[in-house]
Length: 279
Ligand code: SAM
Image (cartoon, rainbow, N blue to C red; front, side, top):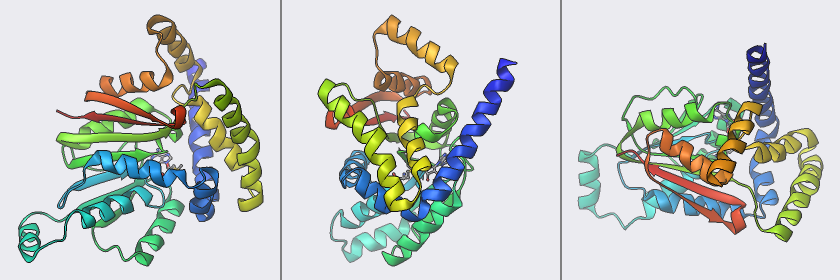
């Protein structure tokens, strides 16, 4: 049946994602710098600045991988202002800052844990193996939720958004950083060449793994329409509302219950940051 076919495809996708990130974990940070020419650092800075982190916050970074976003959040909190003895005592009365890094792949988390030790991050970081589609955290327990370069790898985007909404407190902020679709024509051709020729070649050269990087490039093109049914729905939505995938994703966020949904395109739409509030 077509339902059976869909299930097999979904199972295949999650197996593929699992093996890709197991294979790339040890080279992930180096490849990230090479593939984006270091730009991913600036994009993550932008994401964290939109979060407005604060002392004592409880934050969940989903698909957190090797910890980049969580480290930036903690760095920001530590640099907010020189802490006086009074602040420290006040913080002791409040709850401690807790930044949870949740990822489905233990190999990525293990690389992250080592990096955290090297950087001297202490007990504020909590590493949790888990699926973005079925989180183990309680309802209304988080002040913030981030997901960077993760949502295109999941099987059911709607489930991830529903879970994000569930675990956030009222007033909590959802932020998603993701590679997107490029609109500017010549830039698009360059970007296509870079994605389909340069990145897989770089993967082979640096990480000895062409197939995983080929998958990563292709997954960007499929996002957010992964199944054929989604594709048909996307076409209908497109014809009906003349929207684009970035807007389509924004409406999925709103459908999950979020308010004040906005997005910001960076570098001609190569990257987008979507945000929403649980009010
Ligand atoms: N957020 C990190 C960053 O920006 O550097 C890592 C991004 S990496 C491209 C994608 C991550 O998503 C991988 O670590 C992968 O294991 C994780 N992932 C894929 N599917 C997931 C799921 N269903 N739940 C949680 N994490 C998932």
